[in-house]
Length: 397
Image 1 (cartoon, rainbow, N blue to C red):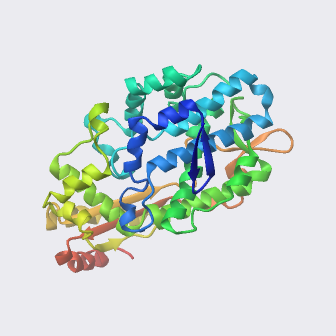
Image 2: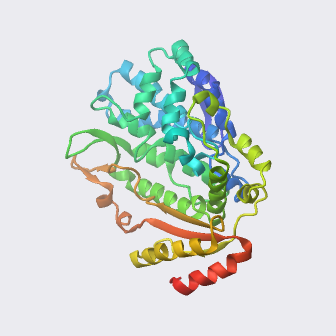
Image 3: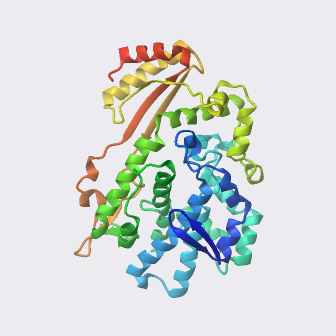
C-alpha cells in the first residue's frame, strides 16, 4: 500500500495497481498542469495541480461507492463489488490525464480536432498503462476503465459511471473544495460528509434504470453543492482577470500556429512549464500579456444574467467594433454556464413512499437559479477608454 497525505481528504491509501498508475508518465505529468490554468496569476495560492485533484477524486470514488452500495448490497456479489470499487477508483484517478497545458484554457487546440477525453483514451491504451494493468490489475483491465469513462456499463450499473462523471460525481465534489481552499475563498465549501452519506442508487420511475441519486435527507446537501458551484463560477472561474489571461493564451496559440499533439508520446512532452517557456521566448503581444501579466484592460462587461434584448444588442455592436479597431486590438470573451444544472440527466430524489422525483421538484430554490452568461470586451490600453465610451453609448449597463 502507498499512503499519501492530502490537504482535503487526509491520508489516501493506494493499492498496488493505483500506486503503479501514479508512477506512470501520464499521471506524473499532471504535477505540471495547474488545476485552474492561469488563475494562479490572479489568486496567488492557486498553484495546485491536476495531480492532487485526481488523487482526491480517486479517494472520494471509493467513499461514494461504499456509501451507495451499503444502501443496496444486493445489487452486487462480493467479488463483483470488489472489482467495481477498484474500477471506479482507477477511472477517477485517470480521468484527467488527457488535459492539455493550463487545463481547460485552450481545450480546442488539439491536432485533428480531438478533445482531452480522446487523448485520455489514447494514453490509457499506451504500452506503459497496459503494463501497469497487466502486472497489478488482478482482473481489472484498461478496457474496463476506458468503458467506464465513456459511460459504457452493463444494465443496472449506470451509477458506477456516474460516480466518476455524472450529475453528482467525485470530480465536482473534489474540485470545489480544493479550488476554494487554494484560492483562499469560501465559496466552494459545502457539506461533503452529509452529501456522501445520503447518496443512494435510485430507480428512474420512467425507465427503471438505476442511477446515482440522493435520499430526501440529502436535498439540502445537494443544494449547498449547487450553490457552491454557482458562486465558484461567478467569483473564481469567470474572474475578470483570469478570463483575460486565458484568452491571451488562446490568441498566442493561434498566432503561433501551435496545437497540442494528437500523438500520445509527443503530447506527454507538453505541460504548463514548456508552454510558458515558449511564451517567454516570444515577443508576441499576447505572449507578453501572460508572461508579464500585462493583459488588456476591461472596457465593458454585461450583467451576469443579461436579458435576451441585452444579449442581442451586444452581439450586434461588437462586430462593428472589431472591424473598426482591427484584428488583435480587442478580446471579446463570453463566459456562459448553467452551474445549477449538474449534468445531462436529472438528479433523482428517493421519496419516503419508495418513489422518486427530480431534484428540481424537491428543491424550493433551485428552479430560480439562472444561467450565467456574461460577455466582456478587453482592449489595448491605448484605446481602452475610447472603446469603453463607444460601448457605453450603444449598450445598456
